[in-house]
Image (cartoon, rainbow, N blue to C red):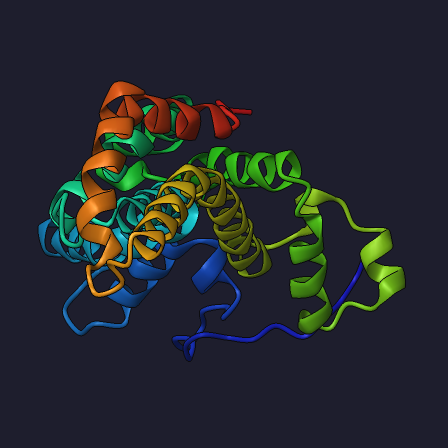
Length: 265
């Protein structure tokens, strides 16, 4: 077995293994309920509310860090800058479109997370619910998805860097498999991989608009109209090019195709 120091994000409750707080957050919430005076630890109505609020609080971070949302929102944001439309489309539209593209691109993974983890947990009687099994059912499809994106983009070096800072030496890392990489190392490595992919896609999208800006600037300088901002002239041409090429469909399709679709398993 390979041992290495772990960085704990929070203090553990009495009698609760600190590592379980990350590996099984559902179980950690139930364990926290046992420490509350007057609570028997079962998932009664008050505890269900606490669990629901906890999940809702963590949902934005999970959405951003463990899905392709980061890739989509970065590319669409840089596309808006490349066109030069300032605040159009509005940020709400960019975020909303990125959100639904994420749902579509990750639909096999989301379905596997629901069928393997959430549904069995909700269908089980209250006293027989296994939080650890539910978390494993949710976590494994998500892990498979993140690993597939990292491997598809050949960004394994980000995982190596995270493991190195966790204290694993070169020999230990060489003998590790993907199943040995914990979520503490996998999630930031996945985010770095997504940012790298997003910037590469955005660079390719940026080039045609950069060419238009350079051509317009050269023409204005040659005509002696140096005081006229080039963006006033180039913006209509960039919008025309984007509309004629059906740019939104092309960009959305390219983003969807860049995601490696992974189901359960």
